[in-house]
Image 1 (cartoon, rainbow, N blue to C red):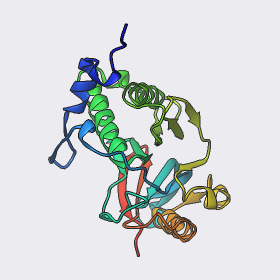
Image 2 (image 1 turned 180 degrees about the vertical axis):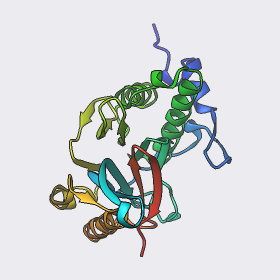
Image 3 (image 1 turned 180 degrees about the horizontal axis):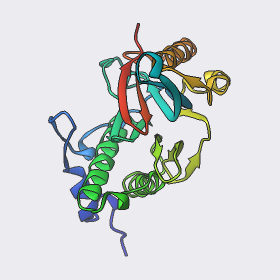
Image 4 (image 1 turned 30 degrees about the horizontal axis):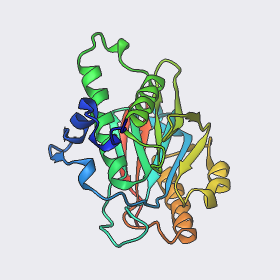
Length: 255
C-alpha cells in the first residue's frame, strides 16, 4: 500500500496559519504563505540583560531616588547570512506593554511566528476580565513554546528570546525557547545567534547592576558593538527595548 506523501496531507490548522493576516502595532497589514518562500538560514545577534533602573522622583529638596527591576533586549538588523538584504529588519517586537520577543534562525519564519504569538496574546488579554487574570510571563512563554512546536519542523533552525516583567513576582525574567519547544530560564543574562557567544562574559559583568536609562543604553551599545566585530554576519540598525513595571521603551543603539 502506497503511503500518502506528507506534502498532500490536508492540515486545516497549518493552512490557516499559512494564510493568516496579522495587523501589526503600527497599523500595517502583513500576509504571506510559508510554502511559497525559500528557507534561508540567517545569522543574528540577540542580547538580553536584567538590571535595576534608577529612577528619580520629585524636584528640589523633595527629590528621591529609588530603583525598579528592569530588563533590556537588543538585536542587530541584518536578516540573512548568505545574501545582502535590507539592514532595517526589525527583530524585536513588543508583545504587550511588559513583554518583548526576538527571534533568530530562519528570518521569515521567526517573523511570522512572532506576529502570530503577538496576536494570540492580545486576543487572550482582550477577552479576559478583570485585568489580574491576564497571562503571566510564564504563561506567555508556554504559549510561545506550543506555537513553535506546532508550526516548525525539526530541521528548522530557529530560537526565541522572550523577556518581560512578572507582576506577581515583581521581577523581570529572560527565557529562551528552542525549536523543539524547550524553555530555559536564562537568569540574569542571555541571548541567541552567532554574535552572542563572544560577549557572554561581558554581559555577565554588567548584569544585575543599577543603571540610569541613559547608562544602560550606553552599556548595550558597547556590548553589541563588540559582538558585531566578532560576527561578520551581524550588522545593520541595532535596536533595544527596555522593560520595567512602568512599561516598555524602544531605543536605537546606533551612534
